[in-house]
Amino acid sequence: MHDFRYAGKNLFCEGVAVSTLAKKFGTPLYVYSQHTLTEHFQKLDRALAPLDHQICFAMKSNSNLSVLRTLASLGGAFDIVSAGELRRVIAAGGDPQKSVFAGVGKTEEEIEYALRQNVYSFNAESEAELRRINTIAARLKKLAPIAVRVNPNVSAHTHAKITTGTYENKFGVAFEQIEGLYARAAKMKNLRLRGLQMHIGSQITEIAPFDQAVEKILPLVRRLVQKYPLEFLSIGGGIGIVYQPALASGAASWWQSPAARNILTPEKYAARLLPLLRPLGLKILIEPGRFICGNAGILVTRVEYLKQTGKKNFVIVDAAMNDLIRPAFYDAYHEIVPLVRKTGAALKADVVGGICESGDYFAKDRLLPKLAGGDYLALLSAGAYSFAMASNYNTRPLAAEVLVHGRNVALVRERQPIAETWAGEKIAPWLHH
Image (cartoon, rainbow, N blue to C red; front, side):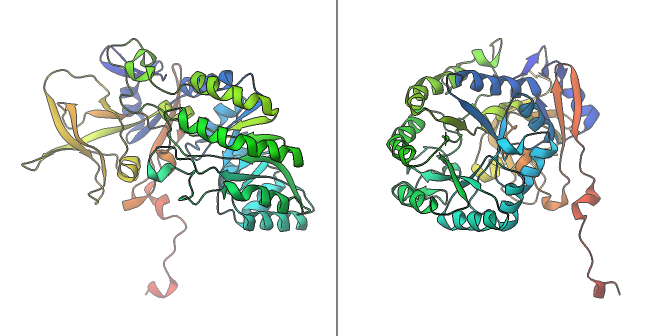
């Protein structure tokens, strides 16, 4: 479910008309619903309640401090992929000792910082990384907790750029090599073998790939726990969301819409996996990102121009691929709706930004209500991998972000001043004359 819906003609986020936010804070503008974040976290938490478990939010999906604080206050931990993300966890009031550090390219400086912050576990992705962690831990006179990321060679049947669990991907250690690697790691004096981890991909909307991956690694886990004092198994994240349609049409709420009936819910996920996982007696970590925050955010943009080339119609808006790159990068679909509902004739058009790239688009040949310059649109399901992937391309400032809680509104990121886009740059001294 989510808390974006029409009341009368106006699109609301919880108890606030989104048009009032656009007028107050300007556009492009990200708007997040705190209740949606909370509801999605708690639904997953309740579904996993029969297990000793920990939800580690994959903060690469959305790293706004208020989003992180919301989840930390619910008991959430964090899945991090850089020292910068770990610093954000600390700044948001999260617990670094509940954080797991993933990623294939951890630097020496990042490993040292994470060790000093006593992260719960490094999810190591190669033997070379294990050796590096062991060396740094020895220098710091610490015992580094590790879990090796196993690549189960299971296809997630998702977009090629977000599948991670096959041997074609850069992630993890091949399934057949895991036991030998654990035997060698056990001889490294400054490593503590704490768990085993896997993650097969993102935006997975059916249970079969999760089921297949867990079934495949269970015998491996049972063999490992007989030899090493493992505490946890991480089954990764990847639970998908509905992008099309993201807003209910004619239903009292999105959750009653036809699209929602076929989604992989936490209840369906838990019903299949809990019977497999409970007999292990291990703590189960899960690392969702998109499921918690994807439908909790929208990107609001203003129509600047309508343009016709003879063959196509274009709706040119003030947001662009630097604000939300998913359509350009993944050919991703985002439902687009006006902030004030319109009736009457429809227009088939491409919705595009002002960046000098043909790939700068949000939708192609999309059927939209008849629009005019100055109208506001919302790109739905923009809470995950949206602002987090934003850039300053074309020297465009980063958008503002707002969090809504009931009727309360907070500006949780100010719009970036343009001069900040070149802060830190200097003109070489010989160019001054």
